[in-house]
Image 1 (tube, rainbow, N blue to C red):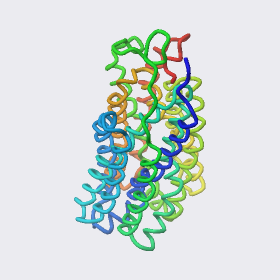
Image 2 (image 1 turned 45 degrees about the horizontal axis):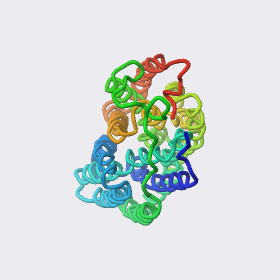
Image 3 (image 1 turned 30 degrees about the vertical axis):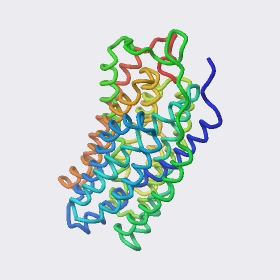
Image 4 (image 1 turned 90 degrees about the horizontal axis):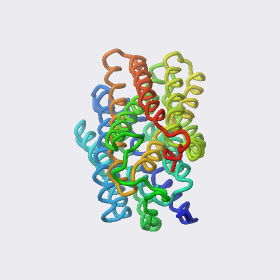
Length: 405
């Protein structure tokens, strides 16, 4: 069967990477400015942490509707709408105090903004590839880590000199200047996917999946991604504040976050290459085990150099998890069902990110420490390993390509 991959496939993937590298900077303003926002609004840390949770929740919920809509009106229009919503949300979040923060980040940046740019773009790019889909998904989902390597340090300096409000306004301008032209020029219709069948590359609609009902497998994948994203969110949202609590400066904490996400970008390319060879589910299992071990190291590491090392190791481990859920879902379910099954599954992950980020702020406000929330995250990660291990155990040994693109 002839491959659908061409040079245009990779050009499109690179354009999407550039778009996501900017868009994924929007949640990082809350991460870097968590303490300044709390101090400016005279509220506990759980308030900006809840705004981050609402952003993740909104992005997951919005992705379900907007990915379905992108199949009908085109991904270009949806992405341009999402970019406008993100820019508007960054401005609205600086107005109206606590509720402005919730509306700006939860509704505009999350529900309408990241919801229009996360799941729709991942599904869109997956349709440009058949042989190296794992590598392509790893590349574009690395936009989160490119954003993490670039924006935290810039945000920290902007917040120090001009304040978090002015920094948000400036970044809203960057979103519009970069995202809209790229979407207009590069987001063209994806090629047709070969039909499923005995000799085709796509699963057959209505067939059992891993010997189970399709919706049962979807529910298990959704639960698994929730359980692995609860611990994933904690260093991602609270690392800068965690560092300042230990007497490490905010600038060093922001640099540590950049190291974490920068190492994740580098390793994600390896995880994509590996997933194309061993399958998405097996790659998830390995990545989740690495994440559990490195998150546990945050419980016993308190000095600056040690935290830099642990942050880099955590980035190397967790980078291989989320895109491989999409790779596994695209291999297990028909292409015609991707526009609703993948966003539903990703909603589970974003709920996990929301729960993990909010839990960190809530537990800190109650106990004055992030360590209990890190311990809960490790337990959630162990539960994730049990669910994914069960699914991997049902993979046919001789036909392991069922879990591959």
